[in-house]
Length: 360
Image 1 (cartoon, rainbow, N blue to C red):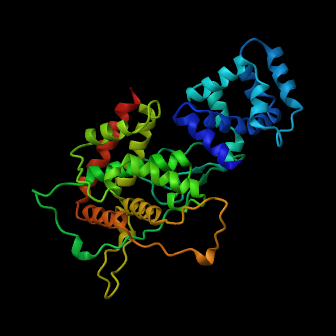
Image 2 (tube, rainbow, N blue to C red; image 1 turned 90 degrees about the vertical axis):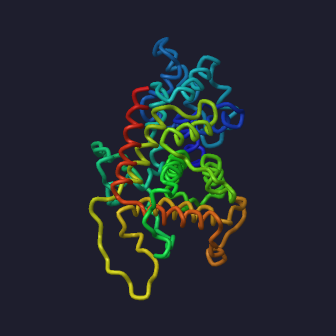
Image 3 (cartoon, helix red, strand yellow; image 1 turned 45 degrees about the vertical axis):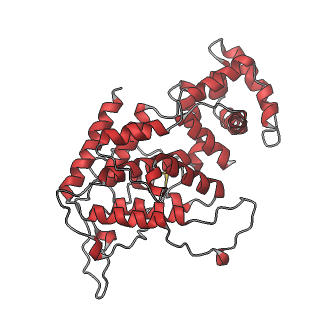
């Protein structure tokens, strides 16, 4: 049930339902929405019935009120709706800003299973000027945030070199990876991505990242984004039709600014004797290294099997670094070699682009 609830929420936020399979998932979730509705005076069902009056809303509630929501099939539930009610439900999924869509998204059932991105956790010490002031706390529904990922990458000190004027900057590629990472995190409601326990979520996260930033997974890729416009244009073109909107992309750019901006306050630790690797956890750009580490673990995950296949904790193989991990280590060294004021300016550029998109 949690998978279906999460899938409906994602589809409402990002794209219309186009296939029979997607519609089936919507109908499975409709059972849970109806439960919430009956507890809350039938607001959503009345909205589905339209503005014809309370009589139609009561008729819909009476039709569904005696249904065993735990056993009824999606097809049976769908057949109980009139053509007008079906159209209204599908239109709500097509328009995330509609009143009905907002009611569905506000469902307590969805809130219970949704995991917010780890970088939005107010207790995770990732607060920057890009952070949004926290909304008043609703004690009925406490948001659940992902755990801040551990930094698992190791960058030898010898890889960190001062950039020369003739060297190619890979910072916009790093921005593209952060945008793709933020999208996958929000789309799947999994944070961090490497924490996904469902094989389907792991496979989908790998697919999303691979399709949005193929230069990360392609061994022979030489793509280098020269500016932010190149990043936005390229990534936008990789989303399916109707899957991306300016306001959603603006949100992803704000996410990227938070992840790329150097921290103003850091915890300084003395270097360990005999350790020739950089201490990434106390670096001002530790959040970027958390993103890269999470992506590395995601693509080192070879345990993508059928959800029905048994998996024992003692038999889980230790992930081995692959070419994606090596690339991410190289990108980490590039970030380490970049002065903080340049990374700060890059975050400002992402915010400016986000503000422009918000007005479109």
